[in-house]
Image (cartoon, rainbow, N blue to C red; front, side):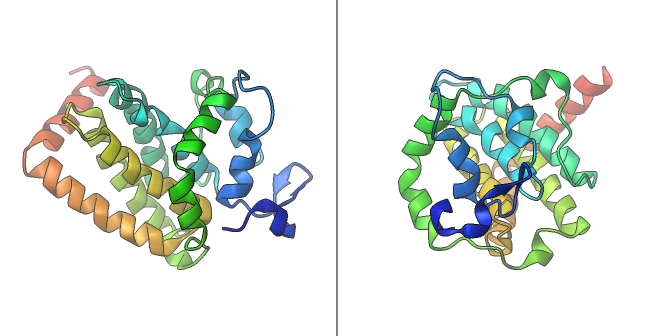
Amino acid sequence: MTPPADRPDDTVQDGAYQNEGIRTLLGMFERGDPAEQLSLGQILQGLEQSAFGMFLFIAILPAFIPIPGIGGAVSGPLVLLIGAQLLCGLSRPWLPGFIARRGPKRGTMHTFLGKISRPLRRLDRMLKPRLPLLISPLPARMFTGALLILVGVLLSLPIPFTNYLFGFQLLLFALALIERDGALMLVNWAAAVAAVLFFGLSSGQLVNGVIELVQRWTGG
């Protein structure tokens, strides 16, 4: 994950990224009016392989807001949407109009990136495209989608002191998707399964949460 200046292939040609590494993608938030609101449709336009990763990266931002209930209420449904689309085999995110027109302010993204700059610098030396069988094939994307749905449900539930935990876990999923890093994805799979077993099935909260969501969606 080398800075864009050192990556000649990271330049944008004909409106599309040639190499969609995390530094290249996030460079779009570094310059410009901090008060400018960037729509999700605008941010994801032109992205190819990393579109789901960037969508997830932005979706989990509210999980790091230190106000109880905000992270689950905002991030949870977006994570479920992303997970469902991966589970259904979509190669690019589909955004309903009311979601595509919304998005973070440039200054909000810049502040968030500043807070996580230290771990990002460490990850710079570690993340790279590898083990594509854990990223690109349909079964891998479907399994990732299923885990995102389960972790998204956990994030939506009122489990005390877990917003940051699930938010960080989803952030690693986003980085793995953006960098096409199958090794990190394998770690994410193991961590997500452990979280589901520990926080969900052991206490019954995950099962109850899924039942409530199904009843809400079906009107039951």
